[in-house]
Image 1 (cartoon, rainbow, N blue to C red):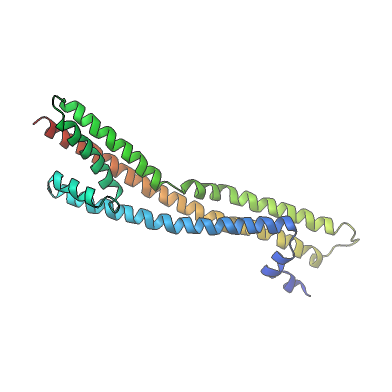
Image 2 (image 1 turned 135 degrees about the horizontal axis):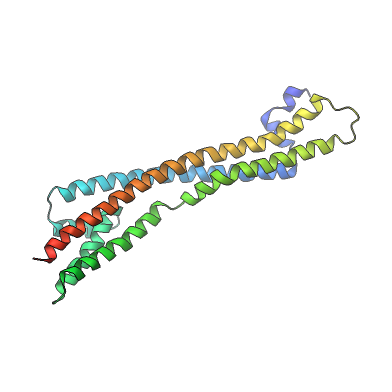
Length: 226
């Protein structure tokens, strides 16, 4: 078998040491999970953005708050994050308003706390799996490097009893070791790009949620004083 055949990718992986094979299998599994989470998170954030835009148009078009609230209650399992925040705040506001003697500030503060609690739950849902992408992007290159170092050590140990080493003898062992680093980068680069992009999109959604809560609190303040 010549050197070219020895340097084929599948042949390199098949002839790698047990530790290098374990590293490659681990990195491939992490890469598969990373891509699965990337696609799921991409669709989830896209859906959240579309639902937020839709509800903002309905809210600021002048629709009655009671009608919006009833619509949110009736479709509780399909509404978006912003609509759930609105529902929680308005439900608490109407509950406190029905109690006699409740001061306007108490009504608004209660609605704001309810919206803040729902906001935290929605943000936790949107940020789910981001930590895995961050860990994949930061750790995978080092795991691949560990496999490379181990593979190079194994390659040189196999040449210990050889009096004169040639490039044809050294190249396959070093090449199979470098495969681990390549796969580590293959797993890390998409994870880092996706993490940065998703973090930016989620931050933009968070700003929109917080702006809505402040504006809606002002609306409730005016209604509470009537």
